[in-house]
Length: 90
Image (tube, rainbow, N blue to C red; front, side):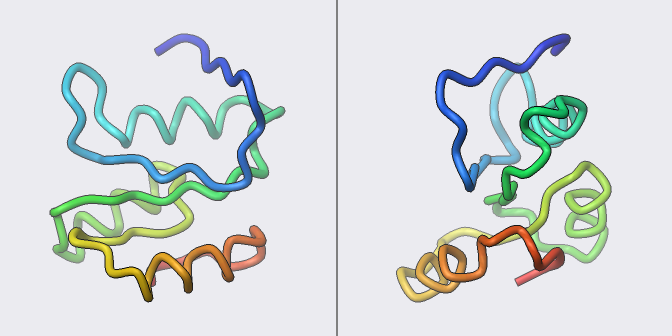
């Protein structure tokens, strides 16, 4: 992915890590390279829950690593915390 284009500027992007053709890690790295998008909170949503998967997500530029299925309570917490000041694993 050589270029990221956004029609809108979201505050939060929830990205599935296991997408076909391009994985979520590549998407996160590409977003983080775009200065205009560096304030977006990136959330990895995945079925991969090992510590190495979490570390890989954070290293790729994700702010949060969440495993499926994502409960409504967790969605609410995520939105409340998505002010960009907290980085880590929920």
